[in-house]
Length: 398
Image 1 (cartoon, rainbow, N blue to C red):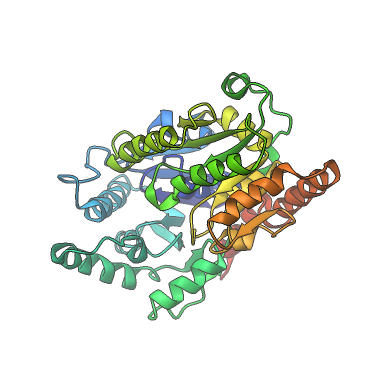
Image 2 (image 1 turned 90 degrees about the vertical axis):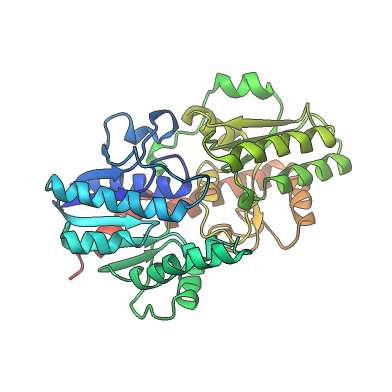
């Protein structure tokens, strides 16, 4: 398979969407494609290794364009930045056989108008943006969002291949955009199982928790991730068990440019002090790949707190190293986690602390059984090899 593929992504940080496009680019490159990535922002200190070590060719256009104006107009500036990338690609004659876009559907129109995709345009919808913007209390905000909601509705399907990250997102997209009549393909985000090496020896982790066992939470410092729930559940766990030496480690992407990140981090610190958990709960920002891997592998269980998450890559990453997951019984985790086999799916908030108790009370046979089931689940359904082959077949389809 020898095709040129261009990935256009807003900000190559370290979130789930970025993980997907990086793995997609890497997978297609491994299959023989010529791959380039285009973005408006690439902070090498907050990016996946493949985008900084030369594995993937990354070009930055439009970093000078602000993310916001006066702390507002995020969607407007995101659209401008994505369109600018397309304009610069056209100016520099950087066309490709296949163009892969995501997040900002208006980019599809720019790709079409400028003729950047010689054969196929692929759009990956992580989740409808119209549903992500829930703050519409004032009249100005509702009026401001109208053109962008309309634009998303009519540009999401301006592509040759429309992909989503889960059946949950597919159902949501169809219900939200009734005008989308085309076939929607589910392509689960991948895990590069070949790069996962069990038995990580990480001195960083040992210096943090010593020989203590831990629960781990991995998510950006955003309110929609419901991080206070993790701390509440751990406090409840502490009250009903004798495992007073257990640690809870939360590691997440943290961007000091974002007010939400800064404010929420402070609120979590206050919550920890209020619950007298200073010696048990550790908050980390932008951890290294080695520490992240060690956290996942050494954890008693990984706690995944967002409700109705579109997919959620962290549960799959945890299962890939044999670690069970505690998550809500809705959204993406309902498709990735097998209840009582590869983790525990919770129907209410108290279910999280109960699942934590179940995790520490497993005998060795149960631990071994769950660990094997976790790894088998990921290899079979969420491996990078399976993802790359499926994506390549969709790109090649007539």
